[in-house]
Every structure is written in structure tokens, then in C-alpha cells.
Amino acid sequence: MKTSHQSERLPALWMTLASAVVCLFFALHEVWARHPALHFVPLPLAAGVWLLIRDGGLRDLQRPRHPAACRWLAVAHLLLALTSFVLVSPFLAGVALVLAAAAVAAARQPGENQAPAWSLPALALFFIPPPMMLDQQLHQILAGLAARLSQGWLDAMQVLHVVQGTIVATPEKRFFVDDACSGANSLLAAVCVAVVVCSLNRRSLLHALFMMLSAVVISVASNVLRICVVIGGLHHWGLELDQGWPHEAVGFAFFLLDLAMVWSADRGWNFALNWAPAVTHTPPWMRPPVPAAAAAHPWYARISLLIALIGTVSITGPELLALSRPSAVTSGQPLGNLTDEEFQMPKQLSGWLREGDKPLEDSIIGKLGVRNQVWLYRKDGLEAFVAVNFPFLGFHDTRVCYNGQGWQFQKQVDAALPGDREKTVRFLEMNQPTELTRAHLWLSVLDEKGTAQKLNSENPLDHLGKRLWSRWTQPKRGPTTTYVLQVLAIEPQEEETAQQAFTDLLAGARNLLADAISTRTSPSGKESE
Image (cartoon, rainbow, N blue to C red; front, top):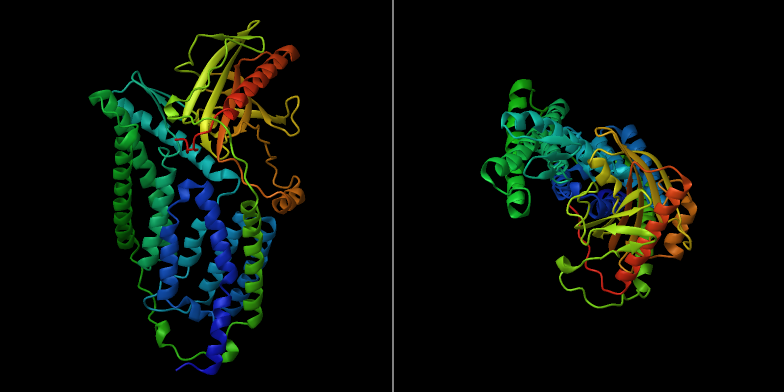
């Protein structure tokens, strides 16, 4: 039977979770919207909730095993949660959630059938949105590694090939190791499964570290084998396994192989390490009533609830204001099928002459969007590729695609074309070390109405106060569909007249593209492969 002191403390106990829950939803929203490689987050979420309920972690907060550590971790969580809501930083919200999980772990009492103390903080790590698009950099590293490691196996299969960054070129076809084929999705999911398996099986922290390392090795090895199967299937048997449902089926089969090998690795490491079972202790549901003096402090529950309210208002307020304002309707005639949509560049454009009557089938720009149309223009000994890539869901960072093809950036400058109020053009100097090639690239992004988009500063401290205030004063959603316009010059001339000619070509192409988009209804955006 519950005492009166326990009945008074239980609401406060649940209130202590308020700020952690808001941090969780804030971080999950960012993960789901911008980080598809982390879309397995329902698995660690379900595992964490199950372990928290099964092991009575909330009861332990009434009488923590390590009071000082639990108190300091709780204070750090509250401060970081408040900072994340004020700065609108889902990354800090994810870190605050990890601190909350660590506080619960510090309060845990030992038990025979309980998961290890490291379980909840380790599972909470998967809710942290990678800052500065670090997951994209992981994609490129893994894609390049997989392409290089596949060379030896392709040689053994007697497949003639050349590796250029993340592209494996064969006589039959050029294979681009994109985000899905890089193995990043399966690698992170395999590591998560390894952590969940170790948590449910009550493994030691050393065992879990070995399991995560094993999951990384297994995922990389299986992805290299997957690349060899796709390329070898086309070379030896003419099987098109690089697109459509066969591609998805091969990826799913190899992911199941990853999971089976992770499960086997858990058994193997358990046999090798042979750790003793956990110390027997009284289960949480059989513990005696907790004295009121040892219960959670009321001030923590109240501050947690206040910070949770601040976070809810900070996150949902601008979104609700944006919904309450009328949205502009795009005019134009329906496009019909997406595959029928084309932007035809004119024969003459800003003094440049187009080569050929149709877009190039194969060019140095490569496949960067759902549709990729490239034209070659020449003027007074100058040569430039003009490309239109569309449609993308939201803003698309084209630099990631060039990084995947081995390009390295030396300089980046954001500027404005004549008539622009904001910086809408990004100029990049880059080179290709493997081919000793130098290039200049101009980028501009247009929305579904043909309006050039402002390129925001990549320094998170630039105009921080202005950006935070504009969330409330000018709440608006980003474009749902975007078009990327590129002008690429290989081995460009450095003279001012040549640079002005390239800028004129970009301005003319963008005006033409904007007019074409504004007179029709844009198709729905779609993630590129």
C-alpha cells in the first residue's frame, strides 16, 4: 500500500521527465526530417522505453544509488535543454537527452535481471542529430572506402574497372556509390542493433564496445561484397541489379545477412570474454517503500516542467504562426508526367553558343538529381557546362555530390547577381587530384515558383540573434521543391573578362529557368539517390 509521502512524490517524479521528453521530440523531428540514415530510431526508442519500464528506472530516481552524480547530471541536463530551446538547436537537445539518460543510469540500483547501467545513455546517443551534416561526410568516407576495397575483388572476378572517387567505371556502365550504397545506413543500423542486443542480454561495456566494432567491420565487408555482386552480375550474366526493385532486394538481403552476423558475433564475444553474470539483487518491484526524505527534489520537477513549456513554445510557436498565414498559390498549367518535363536551353544565351540540339547524355557533371539535363556552351575560346538538376525535396547541397566524385574545394564565395537583394550565388574553386583537373563552379537554387533562394551563411554564429528573432517575426516554411542551376568551367581562365562571361551565362540561364518554372506547376519534390 502506498504511503501519503509516496503519493505526493509520484506526480513530481513524472514531472522530472518533462524536459527530457520535449528534448526527445525535438531531436527526433530533426532526425526524421533531415537525416534519413537515422530513420531506424524507433528501434532504440522502443528498446529504451522497454528497459526503463521493465527495470524500474523511474523508481530509482526516488532514491538514487549515486546521489551526487545524479544531481549534477540532472542540473547539466536542465541547463543544456534550456540552451537548446533558446538557440533552437536539436543537436544540443539530443545531448541534453543523453545527460538525462545518464542521470537515470546514475540512480539505478543493481539487480539480477536488469540491463547494464550504460544501456540507456548508449541508446540515447542515436537520437543526437549529426551537426554540420557530419552524416553526409560519413557517407562520402564509407562510399570511397567501399569503392577502393572492391577493387581487389573485382580484379579477382576478372572485371575490367577504374575507380574514380565514389564511381566505379566498367566497360558496360558507370556505377555511382551513392548514400544508400555507401553502407552508412546499414552500418548505423547494425551498430544500433548491436547495442540493443547487448542491452537485452545484459552484456558488459567491454563486450558492447567489441560488438560495435564488429558491426562496423561486418557492415563494410558486406557492402563491398554487395558492390561486387551488382557489378559482377551485370558483367558476367547481364543482370541489372543497380536500380529498381532488384537493387532494393539485394540491399535488403545483405542487411539481413548483417543482422545474422551481428547476432553470431554477440555469441562469439560472449564465449571469448566469458564474463560473470550480474550481481544478484532484490528486483525493483520488491523493494521496501522509499522514505520521503530520499525522494526527488520538488524544485527539479518544477524547473523541468517550466523548461519543457519553454521548449514547446519555442519549437511549435513559429510553426503555428506559419500555418496561420495564407500561403501563396503557384500559378500555371499542370505539367503532367514528370518524365515528360524538360527545360530547353536556347541556341544562343548571353552571347554563348550551345553545342548540339539535345542535352548531353554523359558529362563531367554526372547524375546529381532526379532529372539531370546538361548543355555545353562555347564563347570566344571559353567552354562551360550548364546543368539543371530537379526536383529536390527542400534544399539540396550539391557539393556533397562533387565530394563523392573526388572533387576537393579550395575556395567558396557567396555573392549576388545584379538585381538580387541577397546572396543567391555560390562560387567554388575546386580540383580533382586523381585527374589533375581544376574547375570553377557557380551554383544557384530556385524554388517551385522560380525564385532564387538566399544562401545562408555556414557559420552558426553569424547573425544568430537576427535569425532567432526572424523565426517569430517572419515565420515561413522553406521551399518544398527546389531546382539547382550549375555552370561548370573546366580549366577556366582567370581573366576578369572570362569570369564576367561565366557570370553572364549564369544570369541568363537563371532568368530563363525562372521564367520556365513560374509558368507551370512544379512537380512534387523527391529525394535523390
